[in-house]
Image (cartoon, rainbow, N blue to C red; front, side):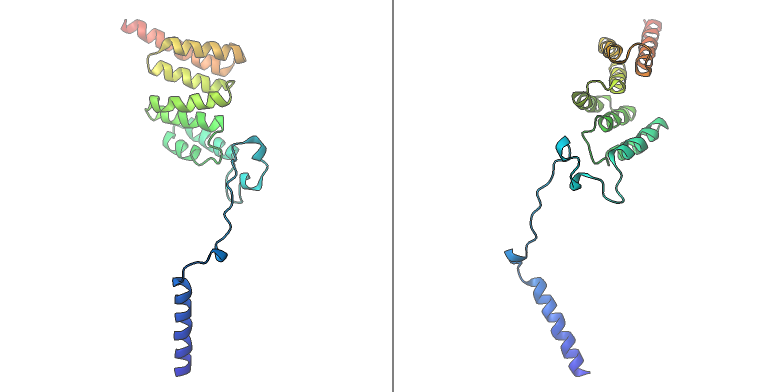
Length: 178
């Protein structure tokens, strides 16, 4: 029993010394260079693909979109912020939309701008940006976005109809107050 105790004590001491000793350069793990997954040429690299158990940007977008559609803006924002590609224009639009619906129009504007910089044809983003301009009382900017939407998808697409109706409502409300 005494020999066993001595053996355990010696083993514990050896383990403690191993952890207390400074790490040698020979034992440092190699530093992996981070891959920029926002670049199109890197999308197919293993580091840029979702791991098992991780949701893809598409899955995150769809989940956040439906939460926002159900007026769960804080939850939608949290979901959008989990997306692996934070530069995806849909994700940027979702973040901006959620922030705006939570009451911070000014904080939403840069997200819309970034989304449109990446894809100027995102008519839904333009409709939401137009709504933000209406909320700020900038009717001219909202009408300009309506014109951009009309050039991109015509006057019968949903984004055009949505923003056109919001502009009409704003004008009617302003006339009543006028």
